[in-house]
Length: 260
Length: 263
Image (cartoon, rainbow over all chains, first blue to last red; front, side, top):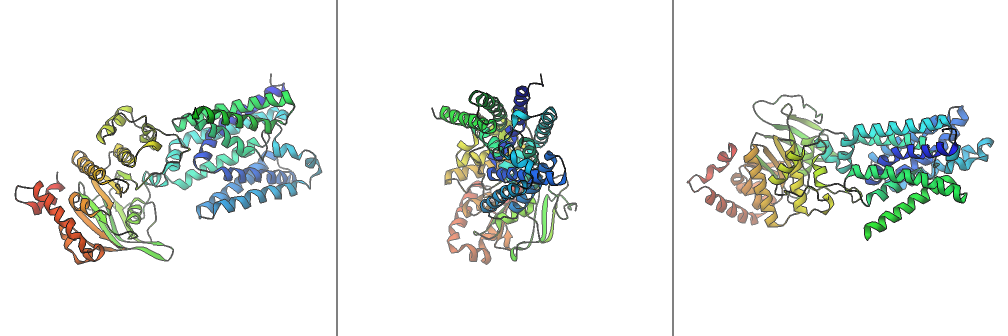
């Protein structure tokens, strides 16, 4: 069954949404959208680094995404003007990455697969990495869930209960870097943040508790992934962007239903 | 429990929490200077001071939210603190019911949640979204959540700042009731002289340092207090006396705070 590239692609999309659903909810609640962008864009730089040092691509992206995420988290803790700082970092990381990658002719030819993903080419080992990475993120978030939620609602309430908000922020940063490394192959560096935010935002429309929103975001993310695959096959469109198009359509739909 | 400098110190007697010569600085600014205070079981202590006097900073330092530059903080080993912040702004992107909020960070049973909601006068409202609550309702829910930890000490940061006067009076009655029912001590911040005078056993008057402290009657006649709040506070004092003359027609109005201590 796994021999079929479509089955692998479908499973990869569903596996990824297990992580992006709950993590994306935190990104929405904590207004970290730009933060996600900066981390994801750094992944392109990670690809260049991996090629230069003969490391696996996944490891290179993970390392650079982690470095970027920790840097941004550190700067935000020191109270920098985050909007500007994140803008500078996000776009510089992307530009540096694109320039660095251009030195490798092999990559130059399929650069778009790093920018927009190449889910139809997911191999068995890559599929295993997606599922392991997603389950690791899911486990990390589940383990810290109560503390993460408390720290997200109010840092003061968290402090008073003996929870360290800085530590919980670091948990999210690590989870974000993991998701970026895992998602690069599926939706690409430019659209990872969209995969985090759009399903979660769509789930917000009808959820009444944080848990319901996270679960709904997983389901909507999986539906977007499978729907995007379908759209891509049917209309011969690029798969990564097609997934986000379906997610955006679902967002519009749930928002409209809520208004009625 | 937050790790506080010197938090391992065991406190003499029954004192719940104490500060000794505490200074807090933001950069070069010394916001709090040489603060020493303590709270004993069952007493209601109010920190009173004008805007910018460091009231919230003091409470946050006692909670371990912000570090102290000098001096030390001590609390009874295993002290259970219930904290009610001045306000809680829940981002509209987060869906959360009152019931779910009560289970943060420690999950509580439905029975315990129902009980505490009834106690704060919010029975049956567990399914409400937190973002739809009025200011007064939100304060009650914050208090309910703090009570679920069976606190020995309640710390409230201007709990009534968003309420109208009847709402404020009702909230302080609720605090008093909780103290009677659970024996919890209360350390709260207020800028409202009237209510403070009526509801406290002890008042600490703060303006970067402790200007004066004592029973409401002693503080309200202290020159330092007059200098901070002006002579208009005579009205508050009159109200305070008036209320307590009624409350203690047994002829010992001046002993009221001792009676409350052990209630």
